[in-house]
Length: 450
Image (cartoon, rainbow, N blue to C red; front, side, top):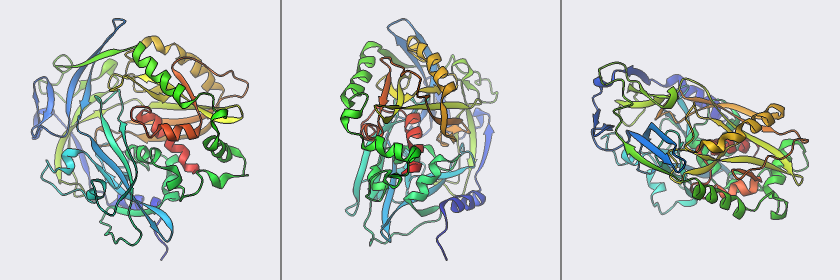
């Protein structure tokens, strides 16, 4: 029998998924309590919902709830060459907030509280390969951020680890070995690959994912966007709009020029559910709310639990603009200030609507209209719907798009904009705090051409 395709296997796992999610009044929670001005788990682990206040030098004050999860989780793919072809171990991980419940996840996707089993549930399969197994060859290991509009300074280890072809590995229920090209092909599809998997793939070694060949090399001489990506990835420094040092220096200059102080405060002013109503902990300007859900599933570490979860009713957007500069395709990123970024600023999409969450540095928002005008004349290249990480976000959806600017449009320029080749992007992805979660998801879509 031919091997089952990744897409058909994911569809099969969704049909088998028995996860049930029910919104409950927060007073019915068996595991969470409101204490010290925050919503906390009774174990003291996992995460909490806290109030956060940011104050800027220009006198702007922002106040909103954020997810506080100071522990660093592990997001990691196991890679093994099977028949000479690199395969990734995919987990069909059911999450209460996922569209379709099951999406393709990394081999290990676990918070420290989960893999240390604070829930007294099942152990995390394959964890030892990411914590020092003698047979594991680590190809990529970097700290990458979560959304700065929802998390307080949250980072995860993003890892890609290879195991020898001759090493026998059991494949538990809910796991599947898929050829890398099949995985990458789904990166342009709606609701198939979860945001954590996208982040790990984007920050991996692209040559490794391409089977040891030149990334995008299959498009040599083919023309079109594939060959543009190949040339952009291979472009020498002299053809880049800016050096990597300049790109990083611009980010640091904004951090120095527009500092803002962040501190945790009590949630009391944000709560409208202390009197027993349905949980509705509102974010700024109604951009999102925090609800309490009860979850049942036979496929998770424990079979039932309840938790807070962030819900955003309005669909968000994230857009990258591209343009040929010096004959080489460049992508445009914008330094974005977000209340939850540990560093204050990171490179994010050129345009981003995070559900109405305000910027702590609104004086840098003036270029938004210019970029919107450029987008209106741009040629769409890729577009798909992604849901945010389903363990913390309830059916939160955004449309991710990449579009090519009109060739006769002048290059927009400002201290917060950065034009980068694909080669620069891959190298800078190895650094902590350079690209936002949304930026990495957009970059991952280009790996469909790998």
